[in-house]
Length: 515
Image (cartoon, rainbow, N blue to C red):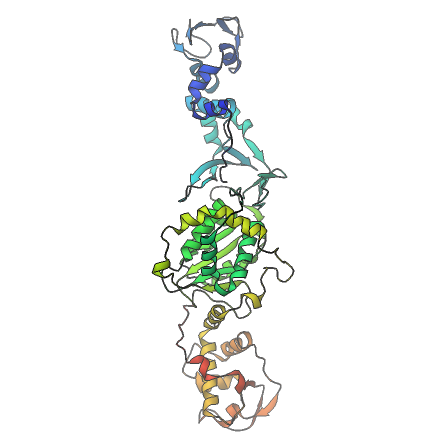
């Protein structure tokens, strides 16, 4: 939760910089001190006695002198300040607990502890690399609170039924239906002005898809609940602005943004990103199928079970948007041909003459003007065409297609190349008929890892093919050499058509995926 400074009154300012001991000794009279201590009641202006009326305390300026051994076990002759008497009488000589109590109950400083359900949390202020203040909830033990503040302090801790996620960058609410909102306040305010550096940077990132880029940024700002495709910024070159883009979003969205390590996707303790609205993953290579499926799931999940350390798990709505940055252009992860959850942008190196080493500071200065542009100049978002705002036709580009092609299995690539080569060698043939067993015998006879059943799986799932009806045919049209019979046989062959296979598309060197 980012801290927003407000206008304090003079008393507030005094409280902010005054330690609780001096504050209590200066502002509270002796009769009030006695009221805070159970069994100790004021007698007159200078004499205070315990309830039975036997033991007395005598005021001597700012101290109380005990005349005899008393109910508070204070030795005779001891001189105590008001705060010391409070610590002895109310907190069993726990001066830290007494100080915390004065600070948070009497001085009314921000309450730093909350209870959600049966678990206690401390709101700890932290700062990021750009000086943005935020509050992080850390689990806190109930017994520790008792030790630090005393048993009675627990009743002053704010309590809530559950956590919730209510993202809103325009009209924020901290509490909704007695649930504690884990989404942090948005601290920037739009202001009309110029933002030339921001617009130039947008053109560099989104290129010929700049209009989609502005729509993407407007959704992040004005519609934080809306699903979006995974934006993937790729380039093998250096100084392309990938990391700068993530840092820019971090500055804009503060504690609602997180930079995540790819390995953390499979970490069972997911509280670090469960309440974040934008998840940036830099230098990404996701080579485990479990990580790929987890990433795909995050882009469309509506609910997420949060597993924090040391406290009970809970379920909240999830509105995370993922941005990947990687120097692997086509093989950073597997993307299926029908996949619509990825938008890939290949970035070029920023030429030395145009390189701005102070660009993040410049972008920060323009944030109010850039937000104003998004709010008032970018057209309203049309949500009727796709659940992810963008259609496949809109985000389709050369980089996305190359990644999808490279994501094919090794068998798909090998089989496509072999079929294309066969057509090149048999120019008079327009189709090829063969069963998976024939394909195995002719082309993969010595490869124990490739079975007819595996060929069926690839033909069905990747080639999107189904076998023909039962018929009489000659395997490989009788042009396979001596490996199989050239007799007319019965079976359900697969039919490969020449127009679907061209050798030219396989002349580029391919990089084999590690999975």
